[in-house]
Length: 529
Image 1: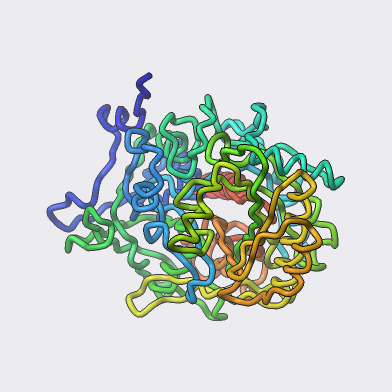
Image 2: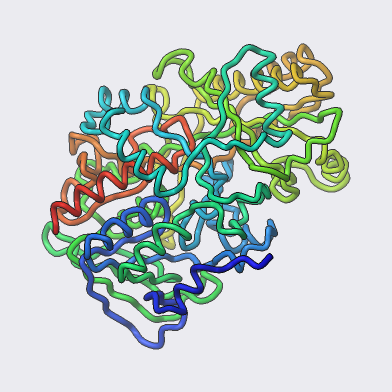
């Protein structure tokens, strides 16, 4: 069955889409709103502005890849759709970072989990960070709006065995669990969401809001890297962009100058602060890039007695928040339990093995089950996150140093995941740790975990959730933007993405970004039209 490539059809019908690689000369473009980044924040705001009749330009440094290009091939996907070809990491390379780099951003390659911002998180933001207008009742209509727009709903198909084992383990342990809402429409249940959706079922920005903006005369420029904002007094006057070659690394020597009335930074919680730092954006209290949060993820692997086939079926459909708010929002670090899909390349990288040891391990892939714990960062004084800084070449990097507060959470998470895996019948279980070994029962696993050294470079940590770095708040001494997303020192620069969050949110963040951006972009539209 042939799948229509609606994006390519749109281009053929006249959508204003420019590949900066092909530019033969420097260009200058004027618009009402310039948006840097096309992920959850950029895509959502672009459609809202364009529908209001504003002239909108979206600029993206990644490639344009559409359903025709998505072949369910891990190696190809990591090379073309991910930041740093899938190898992005923290400054010391201790934490791997999975983040999108393409038109549509991370929404193209995420696993579709769609949660509203938890109420305890919104309450904490109000009480601890002076954020107003974002309570549960305030945000409900915006979440509802984006849930309708992106077809978010609970997954009604039975979970694959990888997710079912988490559900069954929770039931055995007496822990609460629920079904994960997903932003899909006509999903084929293939399980390769992280490689881009070949059937256009995933309702990413690529197939929803970006086409919505283009249909309303917006312009999309891709393979153009935003180098810096230029300022005149307390206004941004333009953003200077460099045209990239086909490889996305080399430059062509051509420059784009994008001039606008309003500018939106929606480049994410690493690249966005990086852009502001490169631009020497006013920062009187040295806050840009600070308090950058992740959900540090630790994992536990199990070999089950029967086939699991963890590479097929919806990647994430079951979760448990049993440990998320158990000790309150500012007690010991809480965590959310989910599972990852286990495709060969990703699983091999996680194992930290090579040669015969890796080959032996991967022979068990059909019978593997894995659990993830997403640890909730930023709520305690002992959890200050990391900071984005610039390398000598101007590229951004996240410096994130886990401390004892985190290591305590990681150890508790390994114990909880392992106990649930044995409860559901695992033959053997190991924590994802450089010194971790398979244990045949929970007592042996607990003894091992209690004796393991929890420190940097020993525990395998990853993340796909980047937040903070341009935090919003009521006080310019403690926040980069105000409660509308506007930069405290600049009249026409706004931040509309996850870098606004003053903490991590304790759930997969895409719907939180959609809802918050929809509210802020709508409010800004009313102001300027």
